Length: 542
Image (tube, rainbow, N blue to C red):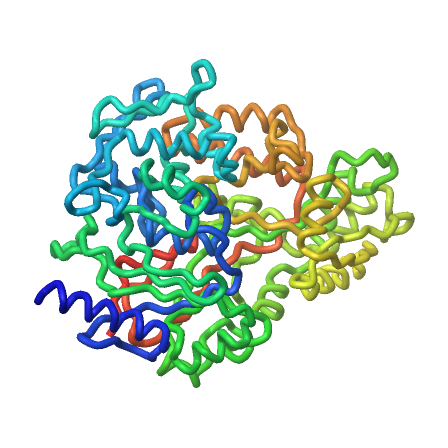
């Protein structure tokens, strides 16, 4: 009878999900509904290269470690770990109560099995396998190799060891990424490429169905290993229902009608409908909607390409680049063009919420200083300064036109060139755009992730140094910082690097973004974090 009741309940859940009812399914079961306009191309964590896939995979999989809401590294499948005194050997001790989701491919009575250290050796080896073509291969660049074999070692079922070529302080943060999730070898091999649509993990929810471009359904994992502070097994929700409506205006209307529980970010089409000019929730929605916001590890900037062969390029002069930085009012831009969503980027490339962030302003609005720097560069009042082209996409056209107008008041003539996103990315990677709009969302919560954008060994197109900034002093500090295991000393070095970087001005930092989330009043414990990770195992729904 119990088995029959569970079967009937499961059928009720599926029927409910397809009917898209507003609140609860029979028997008090609760379903969390959100939309993913960007779509999802794979549920294989080895391919989790964008937010859409990471959000879904975060419900299906676990890794050795995880991040808490303050972005501190916490235990997950690894209950503890040791780091050798030289910082090059990491030894992880695994929990004994973590099991994969059930699958007929497990030849056991309960169609599951316990996770062991060898599963991580396989999972990590798969990420670095050239045949898999995982975009996450780089996270193990610091791992030592012997005869081409990476140093992932299972010392026993419960002990995993990883050896690095040299100390790399952010390594634990790297292991919190979705790429580092554990998967079962026998299931992956059996499905092959179809594992993308037949995922088996250890997460708080398990895969039920996916009609690509229409709906993805995940159900509560009744055997999940994590508990809340009161000893109650997580998760609380019965299911997660992800729709794939492309039109964001339609998504907004569905949210207002209560057919979607959660909406992330805000589109320009309904920005003023939801938010006041000061960035607060419009009063007419205050009794229906909860707005959550926090700093976001996303830095929006304008980058200068510094490796130009054109000797007459005025952007090769750091005084011209500094003048551009001083010539526009970031505070005004945030207030009027972004409804106060974000923080003016006056402190450099390291955003708030990360160690190494310096709250001292470096580039505040100062048109007189901008004019003085232009004069020192040989362009008094902009005379003789050729027009500078700023390459962007249509999504940022309003910001770039604002900057164009403000720069013009200081004698800096700017031409705005609008490109499709893909074309602009290609131009930037190939060094064909001398001044371009860029952004960097942190892969992991360490300032090294931002500062690596200016390390000379990371030049594009192979690496992320799109500006081609190069400084021996900066490189030396970078190499010192990544080996420093004392967090306070490392953060002090990060501040030095940021100041050195900004004195050369290879970028114009526009703003540090904010996470912006909206949910229905009956949703509790959704929370937010600076990585904008979606964690649903703690969520409750009335």
